[in-house]
Image 1 (cartoon, rainbow, N blue to C red):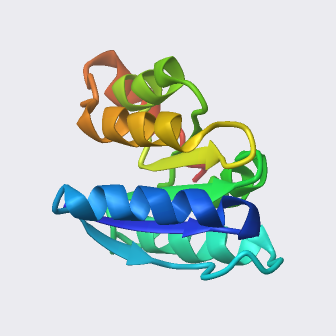
Image 2 (cartoon, rainbow, N blue to C red; image 1 turned 180 degrees about the vertical axis):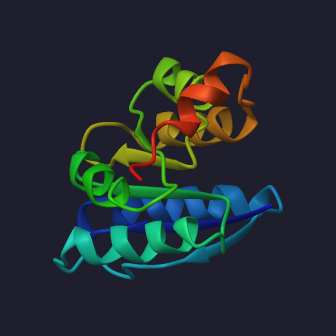
Amino acid sequence: MKIIIGADHAGYSMKEQVKAHLQKQGVQVEDAGTHSKESVDYTDYGKKVARKVSDGTFERAILICGTGLGMSMVANRFRGVRAALANDLFSAIMSRRHNDSNILVMGGRLIGDMLALQLVDTWLDTPFDEGRHKRRVEKMDIE
């Protein structure tokens, strides 16, 4: 599996933890930045990651900012992207089962690293239920 991950300064530390966790599991991770705690614009990293999901370069991605709100808003502007803000396990599971989310977004200032790793594992392991949900997901993109 290949994943692209990105964060702003508020999500940098968590991004590094998640990246190391995934690499230990044998997941190939492309790090879109940021690469320090120096203040940056979350929009730059959200766009970089969402664009690569939208164009099919990556099937899945992870974005982290302070609350997850900004990254979610940016990513969901891209065609074919279904970015889900999940700071709890139920949201992570349901975003996959019913919405086939392809970008997991987390709030680095809202949750701890241990929960973030649980969210990532759960999100990656949860399949899309398809069925009636497939039809609904297909209706999401604006024509």
